[in-house]
Image 1 (cartoon, rainbow, N blue to C red):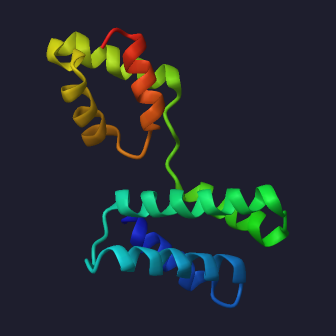
Image 2: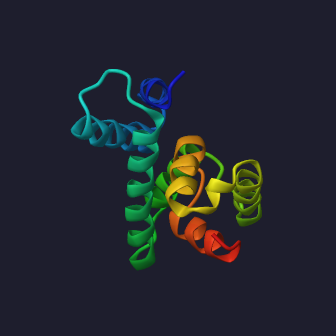
Amino acid sequence: MSLYKTIQTERQNALGKDRVKYNLFGVLIAEVQRKTTAEDVEDSVIIQTTKKLLESVNETLKVASNEQLEAEKVLLEDLLPKQLSEDELKEIMISAIAADPSMSEKKNMFPYLKANYEGLYDGKTANALFSQIGG
């Protein structure tokens, strides 16, 4: 099941039981619908939107803490896929270069990472690691 369908289902299941989840997932669905009219929304769109909402929640939490925001933060973090560690990302890059020397060029490596690991790594971290391995 796609992440979008999962969110829709979870929202319906939260109706009358978990107000924070119901409202937050409603906001997430509305944000996604502003970006696309497609029925089958790609997970990358959900992940991007979730990260944006999480960033907003984190910024607000720096100024004022409250129970609802803490609950929203947990819900949003649970939606995101586990991020690759720096070591894992570095190993992926090294292996890709070993398998195909043309991957030592940024113009080849980053489309490869995006195609195979989108949403699982931070672009700034990937760029720094790529520089370290001699790319």
